[in-house]
Amino acid sequence: MEQQAFPGSSAVSPVLQSNAARELGPTHGSGCCPMKPTIVVATVLRPEGETGVQSHFNTLLTQLGDQVDAARVTPFDAPAVLAYPVFAIRKLVDPVSGSASVWWYRYWHYVFLKLALRSKLRRIGDAVVYAQCPLSAKAALEVRPHTRIRVVAVVHFNISQADEWAEKGRIPHGGTVFRRIRKLEERVLPQVDGLVFVSQFMRQELQRRIPALCAVPSVVVPNFVSDPGPRITNSAEIVADLITVGTLEPRKNQSFLIRVLAECASLGKRYSLSVVGDGPDRGRLEKLAAELGVSEQVRFLGFRRDVSKLMGAHRAYCHAATVENMPLTLIEALSNGLPILAAPTGGIPEVFSDEVEGLYWPLDDASAASQKLISLLGSEERLLAMSSAARLRFEGGFEAKRVAAKTLNFLRHFAAGDVRDDVKKSFVT
Image 1: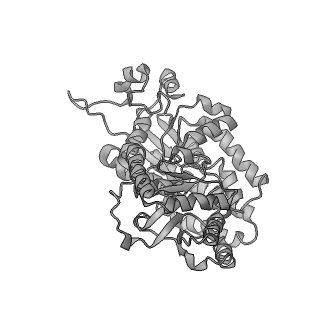
Image 2: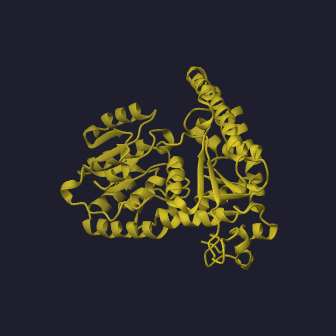
Image 3: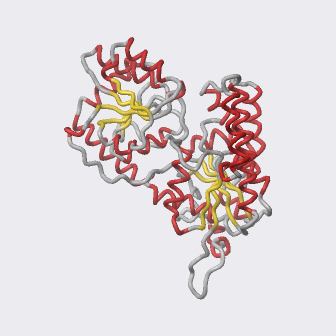
């Protein structure tokens, strides 16, 4: 990674090093122990859930522990008597109009997040709001009582949140809601004090789309998961050859995996697949498996809370999403020592390397992909080598304690209040 990517490392500029004492805040007595920074995680999501964003901020807060004074603020911290009836109305709107439903969701979650944040921020002094999306950043910027409360946003989304809603089929691509979401991102993100990108891919993509972001202090810190420990699985514990995890929706492209299994079956190779997750495509995928004659090879397991443990009972992880920022499920696969089969799209090449921790396969050719799969599962020696490489890649670049410290390093520089322009510029690469 380029120089100055992680403030606090050996690559930090002299400007940061010379100002470290001031930026880390006052010390106690004659020692050198800095005061704890105050970090407020702001999100429009529920505090707990199955998304990668929720996993990100909850794992981060767990890893930071007593190193920070931390709080998590969501719309559900607003008075329930006000918020919950409004949220419930969306159930009536949703069947009528996807666009209206998305607007209702975003607008009212933003309103109640503002209400909860205003109550929280007026009671604290210097702090950093770690906003989990552009809408959360907008709420924080609008209610912070003074500029000693800094707003740092993390970019979890793929391309744009507008594109994500469109890919789910909830809003039309290029429609009114789509355009408004994109304009909000273009207006809000240049106003934040700092940006955390979870992939170099999205940093480049967003800076290209919104050139003003090049002037915002930013850092690339990948997603991370807690270490489940070295993989210890014997052949008797393997429940299926392959596993894939994700919402069952068009963007995740699980139909490609079913077609690959069918191609392998036509060559006499019957591999089994566990599909973890639920979503609107489930019925269509089950029908496709039946049509291609591989129903007995595919298990649809629905949503599971024991994904990491479940991964350990498989030989390899397969992925077919058409675009990804920094997929958490691939990192979980590495942590469990699973070789990965995926296309080199978006931030995926930042997770694993072809022929090292797994194989890149083409998403436009199920036949060619089947040959990749057969070559991997047909060689135990190759599987073991890639499994060992996967664990090493995880330990070196995605283990939660190590990566959470890099995130804290970046946030800490904003925790003492106003950051001088020369210090700000030293982050920008």
